[in-house]
Amino acid sequence: MKRINILLAFFFGITVLVAQNSQQETEQLTVSSASLPSFGLQIDENNVISAAEMSKKYAALKRTDTLQTKFIATVADVCQAKGCWMKLELQDGEETMVRFKDYGFFMPMDIKGKEVIVNGFAFVEEMSVEDQKHFAKDGGKSEAEMAKITTIKKTLSFEADGVLLKD
Image (cartoon, rainbow, N blue to C red; front, side, top):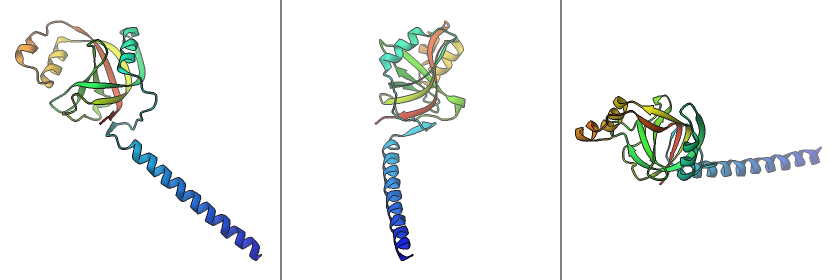
């Protein structure tokens, strides 16, 4: 009977050590993935495509298509009223207008030039003159610049449910 108790104590001790090591490894993984500021849903850096590849995907989209994807790009502009949208640089001077799912989160207003990873749905839309002027005003454009907006514009759009801000 003593031998069984000794064996049980030994196995219990081993189990506790393994559990502690596993917990420490999990905490380290969490810290490294949590080191990037995150907005909206928690996303990771896996399976990310480049801005150039995203440009190619946008080129293949029709106005009624949507594409779930995750890509990395540089922030070209951010809403200066409250951070409720941002524009990301794509290839050849193109940009995509990123808004946030259900108006559920906002981005810092000082991230122009920084890289972000966005996860969500890409689509193509026609943006009205009124909406273009609204976004231009939020972006800090002058009245003269807003007066130049006179026609509906094909817009590469993205609805993000999660964003990682790269350092």
